[in-house]
Image (cartoon, rainbow, N blue to C red; front, top):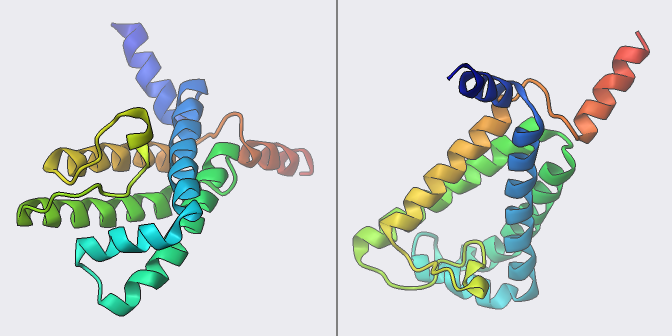
Length: 166
């Protein structure tokens, strides 16, 4: 029991497991954003299906969101400005969770255009389950946001250099 408690304490502080969580979350964001970048026009159509933005804003959102996801994903993978990247990722996931939940409540049925996991046979049709998945991702980003130490990261490297210069 004590070893389990130590594992959770160490993970909350920052260890190799939390670094793996950070890298996986970043890879997931970068992967989804990359495939949206390949077909921005199609992604704009998905944004229109949500019927949450004025029609004129959908193309702009389709242009801004994929590069933002790729950038945040890369920042998380390499561990650079981790707190900022995880905070912005939490906000994005929160907005996406609300949009998915609203459309699920409306009875909408379409591929959410989220993380492009359909390529692996994982359904991403609008549903409350999908909104719940985003809540779980928000909690994972919250873990990364609250880490005191980001092992295996550029942030840790910068911190070591700063401490060495004191």
